[in-house]
Image 1 (cartoon, rainbow, N blue to C red):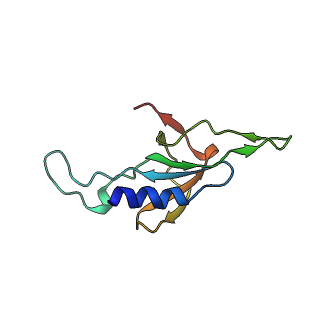
Image 2: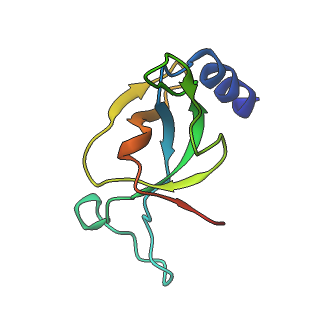
Length: 107
């Protein structure tokens, strides 16, 4: 049921132009040996999953140029940037412009 609520909240948010809604991957909180890492020692996660995309930017003729990524893609994000968005499912997402996304990762 929680997955349905998350999907519903994300479906209601439609990014504009070339913006992309990203859910960052979870930080590693435990080592393989079971040691719990303090928050300051955790590395910042630079990967995320595309949850929603806008229609694309407009060219000189006013036509939409579609984005090169799609929903479900795993992407590499910059260390800083993006706009934090908290939806009604109490999960944190970030909005990035497509040009700010560094790479698409093949999974």
